[in-house]
Length: 403
Image 1: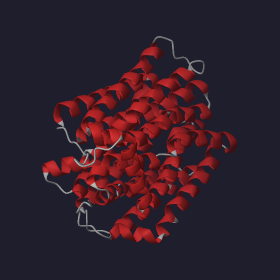
Image 2: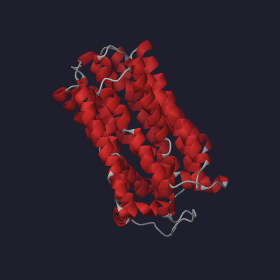
Image 3: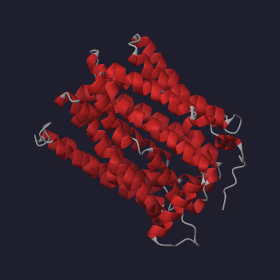
Image 4: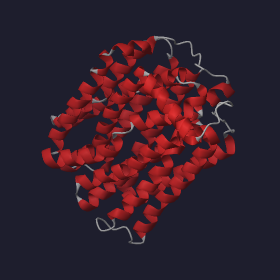
């Protein structure tokens, strides 16, 4: 499960670098570059939210395999059509957006299904959920690190369109591994057959009643919007304006991801021995604003790279904390649908992040837009932590799943 998840995430990170770079390098339009991420993430978020009951009904293994296979099939068409001269930009931008949107639509439920495997895998191998979520987060960070480095290098060496082939291959490999190795792990409670709409409503009702999860998801939605604008538009535009190529974008991702992997290992090894609330809020404070503001003020390159290392060290504590909290609070038979809805809410800002980033850069310029985004990131990560329900993060850490 961890290998399949890691391969898929690495491939996705490669595409996150290659696709906006492809559009911007051929059109010189920050708005068009942001539109690519919007085209992918809008159906991704919608399909993930609606796919939760399917994960609980048919099992996460089947949905994961189907999602990866179809996502890879749509993505592999991009380098093929580009090589054949049928994807020239900006004339064929609608075709590129359609392929990216279809890939995102089928990838959403598949990604949600892999996350829903965690309780079953933890139970099967006899490991605490908190330890599994920590390892999973470490693998995710390491995969993002590899994907960022490989993506930047491949774009520089072979071109952005050809680099998307790696993402398609990663999707196919993930599907093969899950189909061949991971057993069938059904997450639906035997007494919860229900209709599709009834199961979807049960997930909505659960999230509506959990104030802490709702508050965390709202905070993450804002920061994810800012991250989409930063990665998809602001950072590439800043690199272009300052005479750098895709290699710098990859280097920044490598430093950030490497530091996040290291701190995620620490968070996993120390699971249960530190305050979740403190680690979560401190991690978010370090992870966002400093690297945005370093670019905004035109700091020397070494300061910018150092800020990304510090951001990664903070980020490594975030996902293990969120995932462990989620699996402790959500009943087993609701994991698929609640998890998919939670992911969709947390990622709701991603579809518009690219567009917002493109408009901000067009209207203000890269540096001012980065300054505004960094300030917004700082406010959004400090203010929610003052709410009273956040004290619940350090309660009930027995790991006993509610029924």
